Image 1 (cartoon, rainbow, N blue to C red):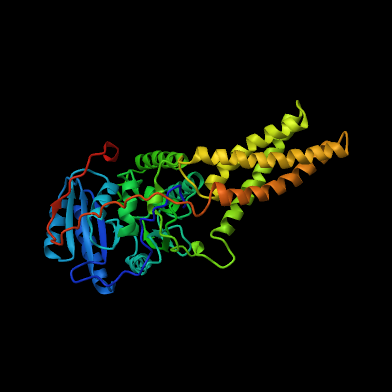
Image 2 (image 1 turned 90 degrees about the horizontal axis):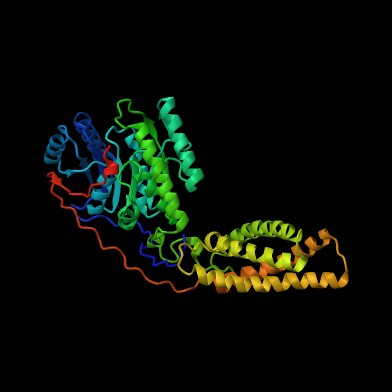
Length: 446
């Protein structure tokens, strides 16, 4: 996604180099709250699977968020007995808070998490992280709704899951298929820049992370999974659904107002093959032409409706001027956001002022066409007026696109630089349990 400033703080995707001795390539986080019974079998099963099948060094991190049972003791014993396991203790609840804390402190280049019930078949773990290791993708998610997934769960949870993802598609224009499957991975360089933008510390954390990543133009890889529902799950469905809907409203409002600095996630020029210079094809021309044509068609229809309405009580020249002025403001705003991908309020006033200059040129073309028609015929039919205006607007549209591209929204405009966030602290390699303080958020007390 292009924004008014694109500093390109993310490096180009590359295959991860072989890790040095003692440095894991993958850090799998298991967030837990009061899971003393399931934690031990889960970690031992996961560790055995990774030891047998994963070709790189790995680590399993137990993120205990405010457990009040014997979970901390179980986690500590697992960390002491197994070199690849460590335990982290947080004093506040919230799965998102636990993931943010552990991921921010990890030194592994690929970060993942999975639910403690291991509902997802572990054979999907290597396909999940392989695109991140190779440099193909930025994030990866397991999907229970993708073609090829095999899922066993009740009708109630199936309905809720599909309804929630339909809400995301309709309200936030999400294109990923499953936001809440507890089986995800992200590259550390992406997490370092993306996590500070994610506000939620609870169950909506996953959705917010994916929506922001998608809107920033990052690549999300999906893996169809085999998934068996855990009938003993402690998730409070109604409260979680309510909090998720509040999160959808908050993120949607932030995206609509352009208040999120998604330019911080911009890749450098040339990482996307669509951005590369191709002989005789200017950068991004095909995408911009398509967006401009769609906006132009809607603007023309809007203009004709306005003209017909104004024409009922005023002359043709006045109706044309008013209709063109209103539609030009809407057209500039739509092209700014949809065709040329400029977000935020910075430069909006200047863009509208330049758009009004372009409007003046269009007004001259259409008004001149009407004047020529009135000279040729003293009382032209309304349908003839509309036909002449359509032809004049087509000519003005071509000129408008060229001026928008070369003057109002030039691709080569210089962008201010934004310093990259400081690198997160490296996590210690000792397997002993420790305490990680976190700011309390009452919304995450579940």
